[in-house]
Image (cartoon, rainbow, N blue to C red; front, side):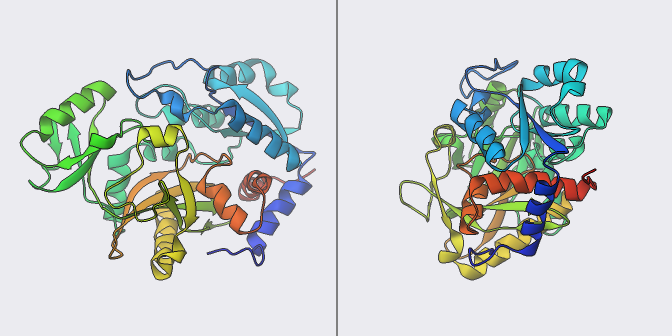
Length: 361
């Protein structure tokens, strides 16, 4: 774990690069906003707007970049980005823009890939992962299958599709959690998402698949701790800390888990998981780095785990498009290094420039 005693050289180097490029490089923040963006496609129950930025979160980004000394312009939604490409590209306030797409509109596969794909077409640099890895990181069953193939400890998983089970039905009597395959921010996850494999499972999953218009990923449920590992990358990926999720003062969540309402309201807190299990925290961080490398992620990513009371570690989720607002495991881990939130945003710019070979003129 990175401690507050001193910042590591790789972190300081990225901050220095961002400082050196402040007159050359600026951020174009592409964001969907609560109350301002109309979902182009949505669900009747759990709105995808839970992933959109609130006014406060947008202000945190703008003020954070300003305090970091990084020039920033905001474009609202993907349509606004297309308009910017057609009309505003040559009027940007710095010689070189770097694109940071923080939230996405719509439903269905590859929706995280639209802005990265357009950036590839227009040869614009990205803060984070490309179109391919953005699509891969959205698909729960595909990324968990790859990680299992790589030999990493994952929750046993199955896919319930319109053609039936793939590759087979989970064992009868197993306790499982059902999730829409293509959504994040706990969309589609509620208190009844955990159940046993019984005669009624297919009926429940068929209803869920109809509501969210997609196949359902079913994973073995692991009672115990929920842990996130934020990964930052400059020249190479670094797992910052094993960050535990705390609900209503409880660290060992037992049978509890984050549901849609918790995520929508930011109804959870963070803690240093090494306080509960130092050896386990170190192992989790090593596994997170392996997952980041194996899936080809670039820039920031987050790897999510469940850890049983006996120390059994299982990867449950990954994302290469993590929210980096002030209430995240990223900001928490940076605070533990002794760095304020703006330094996280400055690191994103400096590390991306380092990775992409962008230099000041």
